Amino acid sequence: MRVPIALGIWGLLLTLAWVAVAGPLVGVTSSTEPAFWWQLRQQVLYLSGVWSIGMMSLVMLLSLRRPWMERPLGGMDQVYRLHKWAGIAAVVTAVLHWGAKESSGWIKDLWGTAGRPARDAVLSWAVEWRGVAKDLGEWAFYALLVLVMLTLWQRLLPYKPWRRLHRVMPVLYVLLAFHSFALMPLSFWQLPMGVLMAALLTLGTVAALWSLTGRIGKGRNSHMGQVYAVKLLGTEAGQDPLEVLCAMPESWKGHHPGQFVFASFDRLEGPHPFTIASAPGSCGKTSDGRALLRLVIKPLGDYTRALHAVLQPGQAVRIEGPYGKFDGQGTSARTQVWVAGGVGITPFLALLEARQKGVIKPENLQPAHLHYCTRNAAQDTLLARLHSLCASAQPAVTLKVHDAAQGQYLRPAHLLEHGAALDIWLCGPAGLGQAIHQQARQQRGWRVHQEAFQMR
Image (cartoon, rainbow, N blue to C red; front, side, top):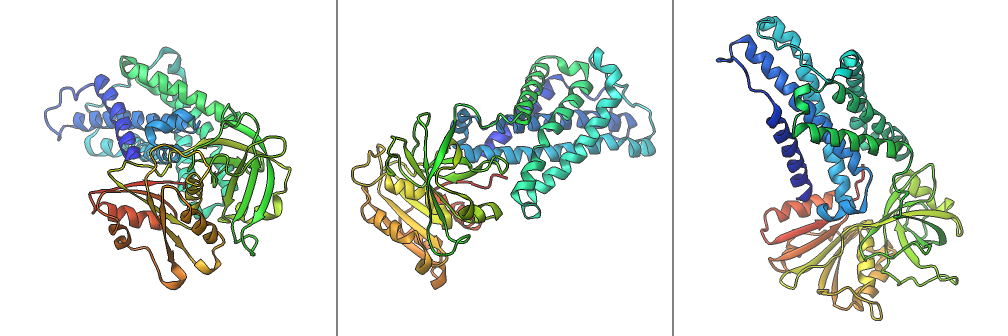
């Protein structure tokens, strides 16, 4: 619920700032008066513009994926969820802004021009740039609308061309920021709107330039490692999961079980999010003392299906992170239930390794019940290891396998048997998540923590 709340608070903040400087409907006594519609159009035009550029500024700031953003939102995956929904909100309000602008024609046809407000004064330097700012804003809006539609329609474009198109977003933001800066009424530069908009436009533009220069993910949280070993977990290359051990440099300060990283094996392809499938120190070290961490990569797209033929020991890999708050922990008053589907088992492998004998365990661990949904248990190459880890886990973790090949699907009753007060940690396909969340809305004692890996 943090993402909807954060989005709502942000929208409310923008609205209150607008209310503080917006002028009332002046000299209007009835909605049948032409002046009412002209003034209403003007207020909708300005409010929708504030909403849109405010949401787009938030999108640009979130795209920097700074570690401090995780704490208030509950993980970098949730930061990306807010990034996505803020982008959708920006486009929806931009459509409203465009509609208000285009409504002048039919208002003129229906009511005439009587009572039409005079053109608002703007900053002195912007007077001669009005026409350019309007044209740039309109064309940037059309381009933004197309790009967001392509982003939401994920099956239309593979990841690589989508990523290249997505890099146009910062350019569009700079154009829209100029549009807003040049056309915002002079009265809107008063407190608190003036300070808020100046800060948002400045920070958003800096973030856009930071993105365009390729500096996102290149700070202290970025580590140049090396592929140490590659192993196919199965017999079908391009279909079965791939285990990749990465040797990390001294700058790597370790991770917590359940976290993920952005790994880049190819500079042109860019980073992809992968869960760390090992507990800290469980993979040992290289002969020269470098820490090893394990990634388990399931072939889900063109890029990951080809990795088995591309990755070789010794090649460079850039690791950004770690990120995430998926720690599988809770209070003793609630029963811990883990639900994994397919490759969603990877964070739980790390959590299970952290419960093995001889491993330094996080404090206050509780017993847990793991429900693992697999398409075919007989062919699941991770299942044997999963059984072994659960059998030796301290505190105990019970394992229930739901084998789709045998018609053994996860039902709400399987979770209800653990009691009413549950902390449910969920990682898996979108359909599984929707089913669990739907049931959770009917069970007042369920708290669902989901790893959301849909990063576009």
